[in-house]
Length: 496
Image (tube, rainbow, N blue to C red; front, side):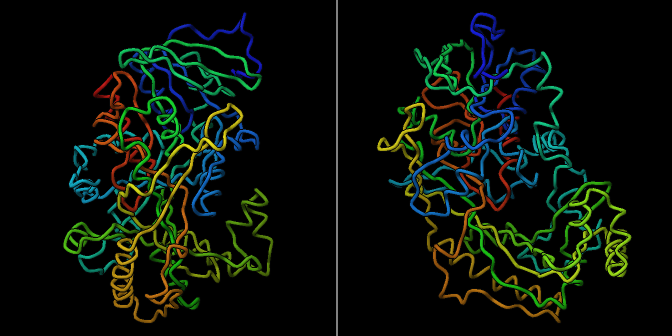
């Protein structure tokens, strides 16, 4: 129910819950389903509305050291039921084994590591894939699509998976609208009542400044990779000296382009694949041995195929008119249509006629305490709470790592596809921080073994759990949602 129009005399919100979950995105919904399956009484509190709206998005406004973060922070995450999944593509990919093995230097001669391995998370990865509803083909089974992969041991050619229905609100709407779980939206948690390490209750405020106090046995913070850090700063400032430290994004860059006349050849191998109505991406990432031998940051390369706006694109046309067969009557595009269908049937590839071919990379960046999220009391939101001040920089180690692996990858591509020609956007000396952009992957700031324990319980508390990518200690090259869900599943299994 909406807390904006909440009737305080007739409202059916109970006085006490086993668990209160702050945030109704992919993580909050998953946690609610798991806890309900354990016969727990659950309340989800969501600051947004049923759908995205401008006023709620304004709550994301923050202060930044670089302008391009504003889009990532303010509009790259959504305040609504379903959270950011109402706008994301639904891509899922696990971390690499080496990501969990790196020692992370946090200062004063102190290093920390993940307290488990990828093998430990493997059963949790498999479980949460079912929740996201992605295809069952293994990430390394590229033979399903006849992808040419005579690459050296430096690189892995592998798949990523895409959720069939990426919007977790519409996918799990029946559960969210059932009597199994209660949701209070347009509701902002403004404070917590903590005694002797236990959160006893939370105070919720609505858009009309009315307040409600609800008691709980456990509090789960599932408000996303940056808002979780803000919530900890506001309510648990003494939990750790490392709160807010190590904020990470995935620096992304368009490295250059391949000549268009080789587009068809490259699409056969690196275009988006389809099988059993599930979508798969093709990526080239670094092998664990290559990373370890050269002390590299992880990286993932993708070839992006974009049909010019003026050209015929079957998938774009079908989506716009919502009636696939109307595309058939466009006689001038018959050859392109037939080729599109041929690629789909023969190569299981979504084909883009006359596509421009871009080489892009998504990079891991190291944990760095100077990349941080702090509170800034000079500006407050409508609830009179300080806004976030976010500092994000890209250091030389990340840039040097990129330059090495880019040249090695181009050599591999030329061996596999001798006829291709690449136009490099950046000579090696031209890379600067401004060359990179964020991609709405917010990680770190409440890192495991620094701010939370291995079960994601917040230090200094007995019943507060942080369920977001803010707990990441390393960022890999992978989209963070799948690993966040796996960590949450592990936490619930061990703690509830």
